[in-house]
Amino acid sequence: MSDIEKVKQLRKSTGAGFKDCNAALKESSGDIDKAAEILRIKGIAKASKKMSRSATEGVVVVSGDEKKMSLLEVNCETDFVAKNDDFINFVKELSELNNQHSSNISELTKSMMKNNKTVDENLVALIAKIGEKITIGRSRTLQNKDSRNFTYQHSTIKDNVSKLVVIVSLSTNEKTEKVDLFGKQLSMHIAASNPIALNAEGIDKELIDKEVDLIAEELKNSGKPEEIAKKISLGKINKFKEENSLMTQNWVMDPKMKVKDVLNSLKPSNLKINEFVRIKIAE
Image (tube, rainbow, N blue to C red; front, side, top):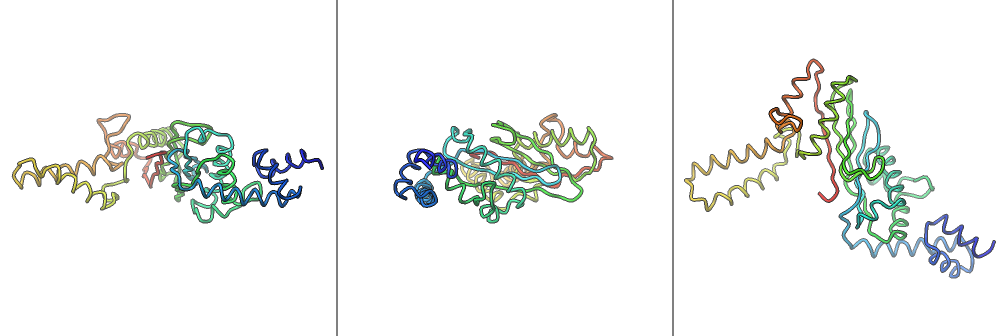
């Protein structure tokens, strides 16, 4: 086999550039297997150097079906790389594996990809090839009994790869136009309104405590009597809970109605919102 043919074969099997493959073959005295190992070690070194950098761009990928659906965030440093074909192909295959592993990242990183290498190995190789820090970010799988998943993508790059993705799970087996429309509109509503939780009870206590502190700081120098300040504070907290709970948010399609009102109006479908997830890059 000629030197050029060896370089071509090494490039095909490792994804490394021509110069790196040529240098590795010279270092290994033409042994392709040794050259591949040299490239792998160098790739790990390159990847390690890049991991101290900031990766705030990237994509969110959705996979699965209406019974089981998953979101996966993969971060990189620039929007240019987020649209790179090698990056897109990697995250799409990674997303399918993530759905299979129900968003268990520990299992995901050890799983095998189509090229018979682990996710971790492919991630290192991709970082070395592209030259940017790439990390696996947030992930979530929605799978509820007697339920259907609905999704919405915003700023789509390609197919199931976007900048913002929502999945909402509705407790129903009905496949009617009314249910389908509500599921689609609800996922769009969540994308636009960014609720923290389904109900006020679901909002993390730390978030509420932080809001209480901010309001107290705001009212501290207002000069208002203590009793009035307490009433204002209570009103502001209740408003915070209402505006950040999905069920009490104003319905985007008709702000005169709350989400819970729209849901109730759809009976006898007896719909119930189980849970939702919204992931947006750089948020």
